[in-house]
Length: 305
Image (cartoon, rainbow, N blue to C red; front, side, top):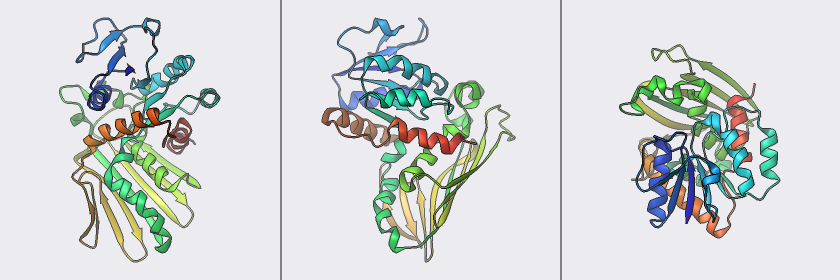
């Protein structure tokens, strides 16, 4: 197996490790932006797409800054090979023509939202078929953590997360929460959004976002931030007769102090599960659970005014 990766930062390296676990014999090529880029494992560096030797790669991983995704995808369409695109798919909604171009091909696309592979979220997905027997009144989502702790020994103000021009900002950086709500409940009827960057982090990108999604019969409230010292990542389902609390960090679902579901899996494990899924889709010609069209729908929830 031969794989091209574009963007070998922290998330790109996670994908490399996942691929090598699934396919130890893989040949990985990285398109680097400058000649003095640091080597990583046995990944071969190239500096232009025309340096790719035949046969063409079996698939491409796009994990460069979000602001570069549109240009990168446009350049890759001619190769007609599967695309594994790190979330968020793009940094703006001005990409309908590119989406249409992709849809006119038979290119397999998967947009990487690894929380879809977290056991507690999958448990909720499986249980959703029983929700018709219960009255769901309200859903609350919270994800807060401390941006300076995300990447050790790196000035957080210089990372793409803190720079809006690179596609940063908590509203789009933590699009995982919007994605799994879309995966569970589909597109909302109406969306209200609030963005702020007034915290003590003092960055130009948004460090707080709040979404209110209106669905038939219930609402979803989503709060995201970059400045919470003690990480918290929760989903709360408020039914007529009880409340389910989903702790994503513990991978656990609790109701009335009783554990409904628990898993030893951690979020870091989902990158491997995701890669196994993706490679399996390519080999078995399965459909993608998160195409560019799905990801574009989520992006519209995130950004559309």
